[in-house]
Length: 378
Image 1 (cartoon, one colour):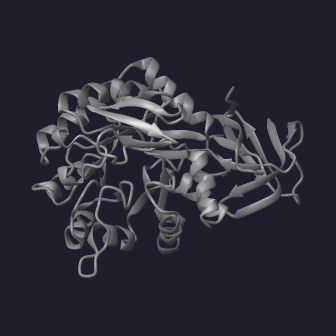
Image 2 (spheres, one colour; image 1 turned 180 degrees about the vertical axis):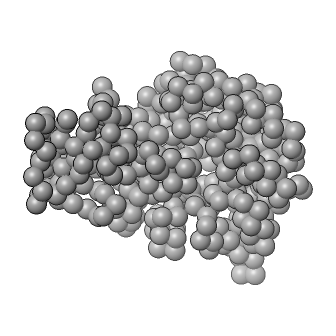
């Protein structure tokens, strides 16, 4: 047994100073505060007051380390996972952007191997059933109307690992596809959409439970039309993704969303593309050329935002700087996304019996160490 002692724990019961976490056989076996004696016959590692948080869970990752999941190359996909793990993401969904369906299926098949090996928590298909009028950084030419056969093709290619499908509910046949996806165990997220308030509520009633990068690639509320944003913020059964990089969402909106929804309804995500962790330069995102300047990814020739270069440790610091309480930001990075995709019985909190996926953070909230399954990341 290993005991991490003299730490400041961010746990479901709150922030515990002078706390400790016991780990054995890859699991958290006990946690305690200064009033509780450390377990006997254990190896004790004194953390000198540093933070311990659960490992982060990211529901939306396209790439990182110069690589993209859509390329379907094993070495490239491994590099993406390595990059995000060292920044605190211990569980993640691998996200595919809209592309010709056969290309998406080929990439999904490769990602299914990663999921079967436990390297990713599942697959997120961001498309192809999206609105070309709200394409954002994605290729509008690859977006199609909802189609049951296409959905089944993607589900089959994922071999049971398609966790989330993002779609635009205003498209013809979308509500029927929401029901079909949910019936097959796929969570549905609303995104890349111009849907109105009533249509969005209808999609939620049909079974949609997530919002893909709220405020981005969707119009904001208007005086006489709250729109998708209004419906998604309001509905108590929806978990909304937010990209806390100061680019996709203004810090004031980020803090406002936390006040409106609470951390139990917010999942902070990166939506990271290949440039995450790789610096400025030119990158290829699907058919589009992207230039990254000062950490901001822009589609060449248009100036439109082209995905994120964010990592989740940076999202934590940004949220805290925006005025979000630390415990709320950590909740939105761990237990809320874990619960949203049904893996909270394994990860996402400092709770005995869960996997020992945890982070040691310094006083500046930089990642000092990462533990996954009870083992330290080199």
